[in-house]
Length: 328
Image (cartoon, rainbow, N blue to C red; front, top):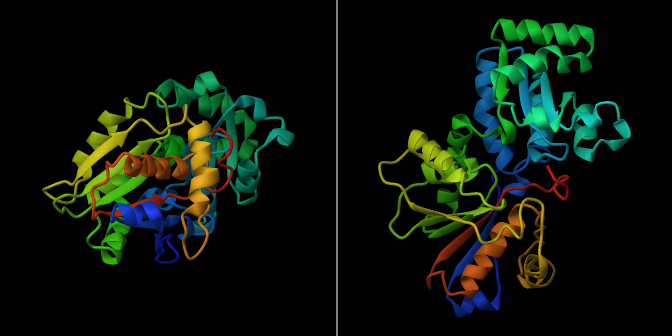
């Protein structure tokens, strides 16, 4: 529904790849849609189909001021004519338009409405008490007519609640089309690396990938102390698996560079010095929060001889090139 084109599986080259006798490709999901970019497209696709199927009145979602999810959701809802309201972390932004990020300004231009909430309340966003406070106290930020429409829609169960990052079972199922596309482009891949924020992308790739002996999917956490993600990832995979046998998968915690939106000297060296020496037919820009850490993890494992000789490696470029240099 949202994808505009089949994206390239772009070969990249470096002398070290020849030494280890491996082939390496970048799956260019940064090119799948101009505005609904990368993994966000797959997370949104089935969620928005479901929303339209049941003719809900509003989509209500959550995120930070620089969130790629907010940017993608605004663009997708504008394209599909879906009224959308985003709950944004940071009530200090409510009356300070001059402090709005490019992400918020562009989302507003696309028709998204905002409710700004305190950071303390945002942590409670999954509770019933939060929803009540949102629809009463915080909703006063909306114009009176829209506030009334939102409250009426909630009473009549006509609101789709889309979690932060767009991560849920429908998001996981949405990666079936991507895994099929990768399979058609490279049926003999052995290793696939992707960045992990909430874990839904990794879960989607594992749950939907056709099994082959010796295949491994590598999820690279961009958060420090991200062990808490493991049970949710396992639950998503178990609930949505498409094949009786799963490929091996791992969650790597050694490439977060200090935590979300942070960097260190080692990562900076990779992005500024090593990556430019990895050649491709067209230049590939990395975002500083997600793909750079996933690709760096692959590089470290190659240097440490943890990639088997003869492997065919796919690095998933999951987009994230808008507003990603700020904390989302």
